[in-house]
Amino acid sequence: MNFQERKKKILAALDQAESLSVFELAEILVASPATIRRDLGDIAEEGLLLRTHGGAMKMENQVLTGFQEKSGVNNSTKERIAENAASCVQDGDIIFLDCGSTVFQMCRFLKKKSIRVITNSLPILAELIDVPSIQINLIGGELNKARKAIHGEKAVQHINGYHAHKAFIGVDGLSAENGLTAHSEHESTITTAFIRNAGQVMLLCDASKIGKDSYVKFAELSAIHTLITDSDSEKVDALRQQGVNVEVAE
Amino acid sequence: MNFQERKKKILAALDQAESLSVFELAEILVASPATIRRDLGDIAEEGLLLRTHGGAMKMENQVLTGFQEKSGVNNSTKERIAENAASCVQDGDIIFLDCGSTVFQMCRFLKKKSIRVITNSLPILAELIDVPSIQINLIGGELNKARKAIHGEKAVQHINGYHAHKAFIGVDGLSAENGLTAHSEHESTITTAFIRNAGQVMLLCDASKIGKDSYVKFAELSAIHTLITDSDSEKVDALRQQGVNVEVAE
DNA sequence: TTAATTTTGATCAAAAATAATCAATACTGA
DNA sequence: TCAGTATTGATTATTTTTGATCAAAATTAA
Image (cartoon, rainbow over the protein chains, first blue to last red):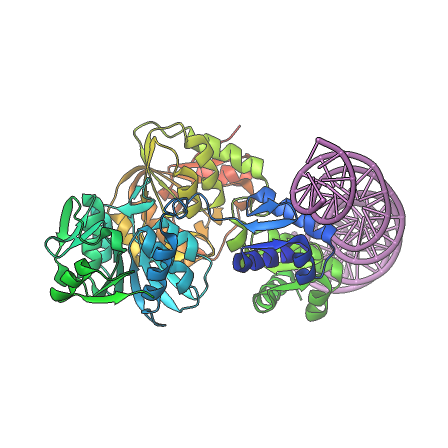
């Protein structure tokens, strides 16, 4: 087996295993540790993996992602919500994925599905680009570097050109009184466009945002088909009484 | 059997087998290893397969390599062309950047400029995302994972919504007889859209592609305002006589 | 901290693959 | 037809790759 073939296999193995030792790789590739070390050195130099003492780690596509770990607050909560949301997705679905850390977490659980994803989020793009069963449609428009997402009028037009079975969105605030609210105008216009063009709208929202309101009020509660959240409370109940279908993860 | 026939069979075999050794190919094509090596060398130079020690691999593994270092052909040549091209860009310009390795090299030389970039190339996006003085407009549409670029009808529509001062494009072939040619239909429609919507069209093209023709003929020589290349030759002269403004880098 | 263990990088020889050279053959165009 | 060119396969010298060995460096345990 030659270097290119090994390189391909090493990267594929790392993509699954997150991190592997030199010896594990040597066994997988049927090559000597010396060869694996040379390979890892070369591949690391290209910046495609992270060399560690004794092995290698998967290199997150740092340029485009960069945001997923910083949101590490209550990550396991977000993960549970995301997993629950992903379970609503079936093979053949066309889905909108909003930018936002909770929606991003869905990627992990979507990788085995055969779907089409329409998104304005670069981290989602980076995460799903190597999944053969997922076709990606990237929303075009102005790049918001801070949020690593596409925004603007052109992006809204782009979304209006499509209809998806389901939209998975996030918000900054959600309450029975004010419906869905966001920090920024830009993001809210995108989310509004998703809502308008999707058959079902799933709102991913951890408990900390429920009952709170943010700056821009952009959609009524009735726009949501299902709220996916992590814990029940009287605030959640207030939403239920307004006719929101609530799914509590775990 | 002649070279063209073998080339076709080699690519077909590789498409199925992912990777093959020189000896396997020699057996399939009933030719000597020496001939196969010569063939593989030529085909690899065209960028249609990846030469490995002992054989060749299907090109798609570029997906993993990130494409910019490619088969490292004449990288310094590309750099010189790119630097020359970048020197045509002024602060305040709005420019289209095509996907393709030579155009990609321009990024290095653009980082100090205050410009707006409209592109369908993800490597360019990744390279420029952290440059504060550059605003990026990403073209939306279907993601071509292999080329790490956006293609399709939606992308063309997106481009049609803008006008840029300059477009920097690449081709797979360029000749006085057949004008601009490309390997794939998808890419050529995007490039055509860039040409249509730009004030000036700069074609970045190293000498190896001049005088050669590829599969899809998509634009006349007259579409180009300036050809930026690395060395002069009688083939370049033939283009000059057709009225192409030629800039030779270095 | 020091001692024990692991990992690494360098070096080297064997094996494999390649590029270069050359003669034989096939093709080309006058 | 025939000279000139291009292509092919064989041979050989060179280069690349590989696995093994071992001292140095890094990590872990005490």
